[in-house]
Image (cartoon, rainbow, N blue to C red):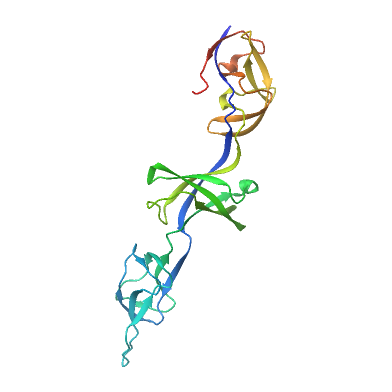
Amino acid sequence: MFAVEARPIRADGIRDYVSLNGEVEAASSVDVFASAGGQLIEITAAVGDRVARDQVIARVDPSRPGQVFSPSPVEAPIAGTITRLSARAGALVTPQQPIARIATTDELRLVTAVPERFIGALAPGQNAIVRFDAFPDRTYRARVIRLAPTLDQQARTLEVTLGFLNRDALLRPGLFARIELTLSERPAALTVPRTAVVVRGGQPNVFVVNDDSRATLVPVVLGAEAGGRVELRSGVAAGDRVVTRGQNLLDDGALLRVIDIDEAE
């Protein structure tokens, strides 16, 4: 007689996902340029300031030796938040040199790179769970809104953009994100702990406990795997008691002394 632990097969579903890293970005941003070259004599806004469209954020003195001109204002082309100042007061700037960057931080995006082997399972609308090291007690939800038309040929990845379904004031451009991007979800899938599966003859099986406390070796077809659990697509039914500890020493028909583990554990 073999002492084993067993628990019922659960129809609690499974979510197949890929773990990725990403970064929060503003939905749109623009660089701000001076209309004339010269010395940057004043900067009237700081990083993090919200500015209105056409608001003056700096002034440039375009004067030259022997020529004196009035300071030229540098205006914000859009309303948003200043996320970068690329020059300091006193510096010489040109119309081709950005002075600042303004982002529309009211709308944020999450950008990640998905390895090539997963792109066949990608589609707009797929959901993701997002966490940030900066806020370990918070969880955010996001959804795929755009797939890049081409792959990065060097990294063999596809850029994927997600939109937040819930967000708060803590989120800001540049934050590093850890993403669980759902590839498929089967709400009624039958699952067992992955360790319950034994391989015999090159095929996956589980030991099911019969009413006479004997073990029956049942061939199964495996499906998605996540969180230490695996989907069983055939061979068993919900409620069947499957051996989860001690199974590796069993043979078909072995007499068992069963310790039942509650389904909720």
